[in-house]
Length: 205
Image 1 (tube, rainbow, N blue to C red):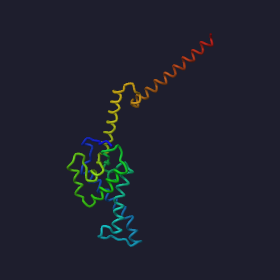
Image 2: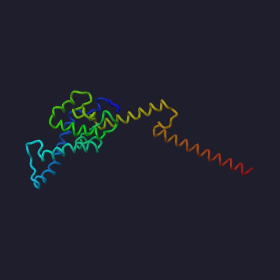
Image 3: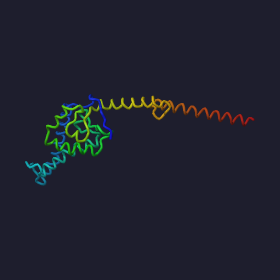
C-alpha cells in the first residue's frame, strides 16, 4: 500500500460535493418512495420515530446501499457526482477496493448521517477529506482535471523510462512502437530478398 499525494488543485471543493450530495439525496428519496409506498400499503409499514423501526431500517439500507453500490460499481461516482463531474479516489491504492468503499460508504456514511457536522472537515484539510474519507483513505477529485493529470503523469513516467533505458523497446510510446515494428518488418523483407538471391545464385552455379 503506497500513499498517493495528489496536487491540491485536483480535489473537489465543498460546494460541488454539497450539490452532488443534494442530488443523491433526491434520487434516494425517489427510490425509497418507489419501494416503501407499496410496502406501506401491502404490509402496513409506516414511518416511525424510533430509529430501529422496520421503515427506518429499510430506508437506511436503501441510503447506504445506493452510495456503496454506485461508488463501487461506477468508478467512484454516484449520479450526483457524475452530474457535478467529481469522483471518489483512493489515496492509498491505485483503484477503489471493496473494503475501502465499505469503510467510506457504509461505516463512515452511517456516522455522518447522524453527525453531519463532520462533513465540514473538508474545509480544514489539504486533501478535502470529511470523516468517512479519513476512515477509508479516500478523497473526491475533479474528474476532468484528474484524468488529464493521470495522462500527463503516465507520459512523464514513459519519458523517464525511455531516458533511463534508451534501448529498451518495452517502454517506447505507441508511435515509437509502430516505427520499431515497421523497421523490423523491413529487416525481415530484406532478409527474405537476400535469401532468394542466394538461392538463385546457387541454382545458376
